[in-house]
Length: 253
Image (tube, rainbow, N blue to C red; front, side):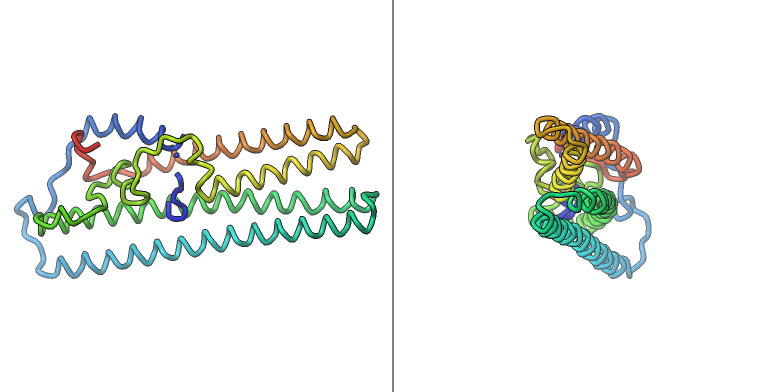
């Protein structure tokens, strides 16, 4: 989540909606420490505030790493395009170009794959930090329930609550939302790299322009399908590992 707005995390939103609606109907918010009558430490508010700032710092570090990894990939891709253009000009698209491109493009593609995987991990980590912040907000409102009208983020730690805090739009319906988030942008660029590699390889084998374009488009589509399948599978796995303690009431879901 984060820039990673995870991410985000949407087709993702359809997965969120289906499972969260089921879970919301079978859970009711558990009583908190401050509303259950249990004795609490006089330092509870200080401890909660310290944890709050710790989670915010963790989110900030995740943003920084995600942006650094994305910048590294974009820089490598830009350098590869410039290098291929120079080699193509120097060799007039001769044997040197067809020997150079199959070496360079797989490296860029590998970097893109690892970038997508790592940003996905950062998005999951960010969802954990957001879940923690929502729990802390729940505690704050137990201490001072009269302040609830002034909060714009959620006090619940299930899927709906996490998305409401992270992106303020828990039900993004557009199927194109996935391509707005950073992992989706990088996935498209990396799929283009896969298509370019396949097309250049076909040209090197003298398969003709039409066949090269066809193979390039096919490689692009296969790469995109792989990225989408990976994203859906990992998001589902991440969601299963998040256990809500204060789920959104059905009336607010």
